[in-house]
Image 1 (tube, rainbow, N blue to C red):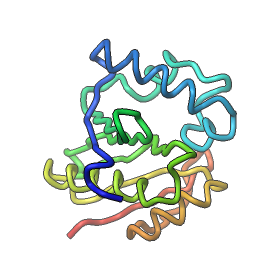
Image 2 (image 1 turned 180 degrees about the vertical axis):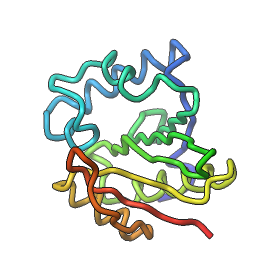
Image 3 (image 1 turned 90 degrees about the vertical axis):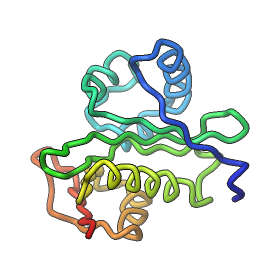
Image 4 (image 1 turned 60 degrees about the vertical axis):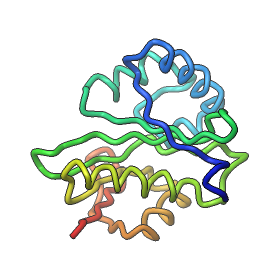
Length: 162
C-alpha cells in the first residue's frame, strides 16, 4: 500500500455535501443486515440514514474520517471525544469488502488514535458485537483489552495510552 494510493479525510454530517455523499455510500455498504448489525446493532434493517445520524451524530464532539482510494470512499471510522475523562470512543469502523485484508482498518484506527492523543486522550474505548471476530482480532492486535460486556451484550474493549 503506497501513501499516494490511499488518503484520509475528515468529513462532517453538518456539511450538506458531505452528508449527501455519506448517505449514498452508507446505503450501498449496508445492503445486508449482518454488515449493519456488526457496525451498529442499535440500527434496524433496512438502513435509514436519518436514524443513523440521530443515534450517533448529534454532538459536535464526534469526528468522522473517511479513507479514499482514487477519490472513492472505501473506509470509515468515527470517534467521540470525551476529553473530560481523557477518553475517546471509537465506533462505526467499516472497510468496503473489496478492500479488506490490506491493513486499511488498522491504518484508519491508528490515525484516529494519533488524532485523539493530540487532542488530549489518554485512553480509547470500543464496543463490539461478540460475533464480529475480525474486529476483535484487529483491536487485540492494536493493544485493546476486553473489559467485560455492556448491558446490551456488546464486548467492551479498552486501550490505555501512556
